[in-house]
Image (cartoon, rainbow, N blue to C red; front, top):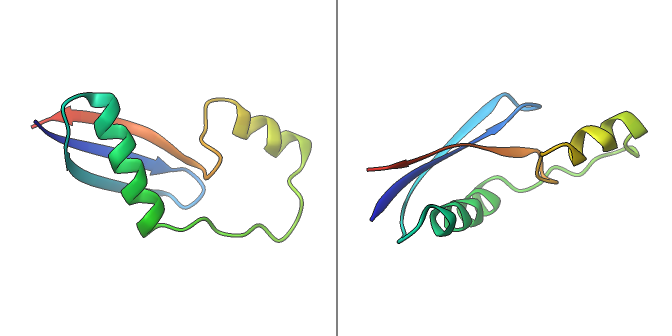
Amino acid sequence: MRWEVEFYHEGRRALARYGVEATTPAEATRLARAELVASHPAVKTRRRLSLYEQAQRIGGLHADGWTLQRVVSL
């Protein structure tokens, strides 16, 4: 089955969309995240994150800042 998976990065205000072949939405998400990491390497932070910023990252965000926006079956 073909899936379209979108990720959004609030800090960069960027939307990344990937089309993948997978049998389940969970597998599609895993494959698309692998493509995302390959095409958008993490930016090194120059300073230590504040406690507020650390708490924001724990609240449902992935460590690299990208959040799953949408998974659609095509």
